[in-house]
Length: 162
Image (cartoon, rainbow, N blue to C red):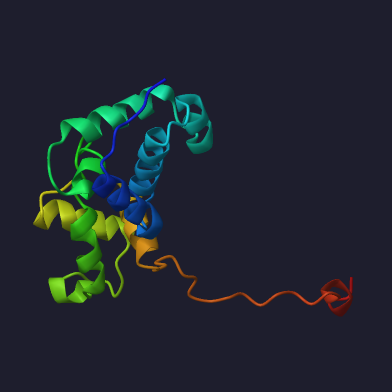
């Protein structure tokens, strides 16, 4: 059975974080540490939070190894490895600009035009998915029909003599 020793100040801070945070990562970690300090079994905590035993032990190790006064930094996850986002902050401001201001002969950004502009101006090769995510994030639709065809009448064959 794993138990965690918390001072009264740490317990109060963890309870405050668990009660007022909007970050799901912090909430789950604070709850797990509070339950461990209250001598709940690790199996119960893993079932409540839907995580593995190893995750609980990792959170304990991370909490105890960080020796800072700020408890939020002790709880927050470490930066993850992998390729960082390259176009997340670049695409959004460009979509607000009119493509004609940059010399293009289009009134709206299309996915192809935006990808071309990013590769020429910013030397970024951006996937079509990144562009579509940016368009969705801003609530824009760039493929709009220019006209709507009239629907046929229900009795159009009779009207034509058929």
